[in-house]
Image (cartoon, rainbow, N blue to C red; front, side, top):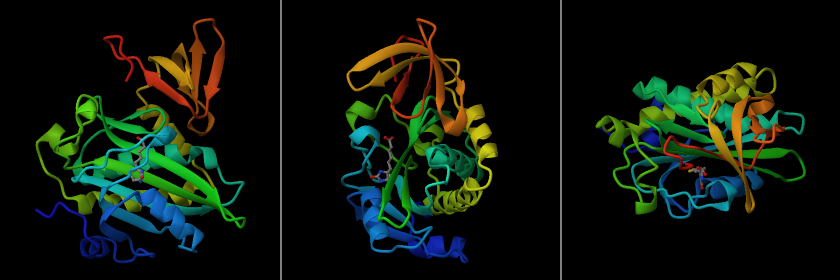
Length: 262
Ligand code: BTN
């Protein structure tokens, strides 16, 4: 079975998509590359896939390990200031979840705000980056999915999984990539009008809700209970002193049953 993504296969699966997706073997970061391309005039919907990344970027300035076997993709959305910019990551999470269900029949859970889990381990991370050239807003939505990954760096091996490791089956990356683009294009089309259905799906699939969480900010952390998903995918939490907050960004680590935070 062909497991690696190629332009030829992707173009065959998406014959009418414009612009045609770009596929490279190796890159520093698909997000960094697409942000640069956006400044040089790349079209709405430009998508780039890489077989591995040498400087993959994660949230909060972290690195994102990007070994062979994963899908590393970024898509460009050209937006206006009055678009619902805060819900882009939630829309993308739902799009990835739908694509994985359709392409390989797996049911993933969402860990607020930007992770997809399979069997309680991280399968996918999403990094949305916004920039402007003074004319409009350029959103680069970066998605890393552990598809046929066999080995992770030691520090991740207890926390990350891949479809191959979880199911024992290698899957066709082209199929997933094609469904991913279809779903992202569909999510893009509801953004300005009515993203509420996506946000409801996000809330329903989000396993953070109902859990004890640790809200981490700079060098502070506070214990809280995750109460639910609010407007634009924000997480509503209640602290131990009874006060409540709607978290738009930052980080809420979920307390695992053994008392650890993951
Ligand atoms: C996270 O889990 O912190 C977010 C990870 C996002 C990784 C993807 S892989 C494709 C795109 N290019 C990058 O450099 N990062 C994103």
